Length: 320
Image (tube, rainbow, N blue to C red):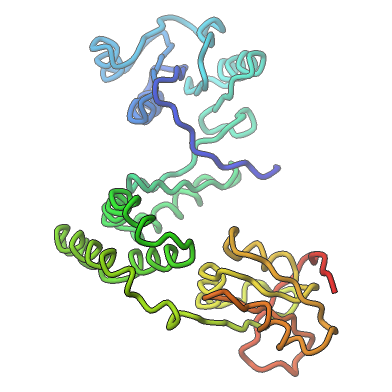
């Protein structure tokens, strides 16, 4: 199975069809209504809750067996009938109309899949196994539920309220990113976990008010990482964090692309030739003007020190 393209869809005010009237269809309809979709449910019979939602106008009911005409002007369709033949008819009709279709518990028939979700609104984490192992995806979700408590959503909402003020206080993107590192990793989250929302708000305001007086020169940092081929999993958490905080990634031209993919996508990349002069001096020169830099060197054997890490795939082009 080819990898799926992950996306989050804005369904506010958009028509979405659910085919089926049982418990699974009810669950799907509930999630769609929560997202603001205009839900249509088509089935011969409905659960009591679906009937109630139809009666109070929360959704539209299309009675009877599946009719391809139900797909008129819908954005998505979910087939939850429990009958594979009917579900296949829904998928075929959707394909004819270029409508994305999900068939519950049948990835082979689906043109999109609904992931396992950790909801910490406004933060939403989606987990998918591309249909290969849905039980495993649910177990990953359970672990993430425990890892990310409800304070994560409160923290995201707080950051959203101050977003414009943060941009004004930190017009430089590097400084703004470091503020967010402090916000997400520092004392604010601890205050929110203790229920001290007012204290957290005040701490953020105080930091923003003092932004102009922060000594950025103290924050300059260069991290050296040596990697060996074929073992990308040996990068430590500290090294991965440095790569995701760096303003620039300086690397030898034969660095495997897998490492560049692990770094922050908007960080600058500076490739240096391995045998052109002193590579360490060239690497440090390439870091000039950046506050946080990561230098990645490719190791060649056991003579490297014991802190070396590794990884590989194809290499980027390097200019001399």
